[in-house]
Image 1 (tube, each protein chain N blue to C red):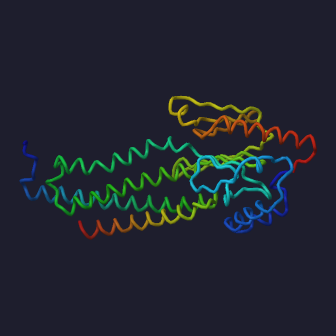
Image 2 (tube, rainbow over the protein chains, first blue to last red; image 1 turned 60 degrees about the vertical axis):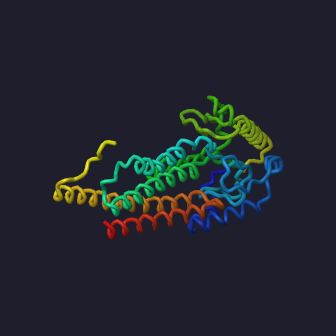
Image 3 (cartoon, rainbow over the protein chains, first blue to last red; image 1 turned 180 degrees about the vertical axis):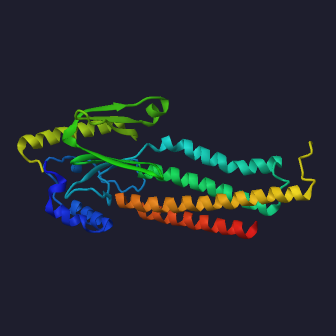
Length: 232
Length: 79
């Protein structure tokens, strides 16, 4: 498998605006003939869902380090049920002014101050909800036909993108713990890479066993390609 | 029903309201900075990962920033 950074064509592309470059990659990847070994494309439907937590062959999705012809096979986010905590918190916070009004706690304040406080409070809630939703939306795990990419968006000031090639994966573990995880079928995937490299974690993703099966198939395909000399 | 506390001394009430006003204006300013950060971060994440929903997320970010600006103006005018 050649190094993606060695391609001269790739270097030319990197000088373009990232968005243009990404669009180009997306168009290119959809028009590039599929590799012989990637049975995934025919075996799984294309996902057009905008907010899916488990999307196979997602349409119109690309990332900035996407290689020529590299196809996104899986786009994963945390299971929506794991987001219930911040949604419940936001709803609870929204009810606080109603409660305070009911017991007359702030009745001594002038009306304009009460209004300002109310507007400020609801802005705070909207900010909290927006940040939590963004954290969920942009915290994605991508499986391509070449690599695993983990895009972390833990807070407004922290972003981390890490990648590992499929052939560097040595062990795949799917873990599902708890009543909620069993009921809604979500759990963690741990990908053990080569020595001295840290473990990849796909946390609280839907259908962990199915993902594990897909990853194992991809690893086998990659090994088969190496044997047949079809590696890129 | 128990009588709720009320301000008896006008000067004390004025000082209290002034403190509340400064606090609210400061909070609105900090929130505006937060909203700018959110918009910037959305823009950066859009460059990292492009999905069909990215445009809507961008619009949400800008609306949030406008709302934060509006709230700060309202605070400055009403209080």
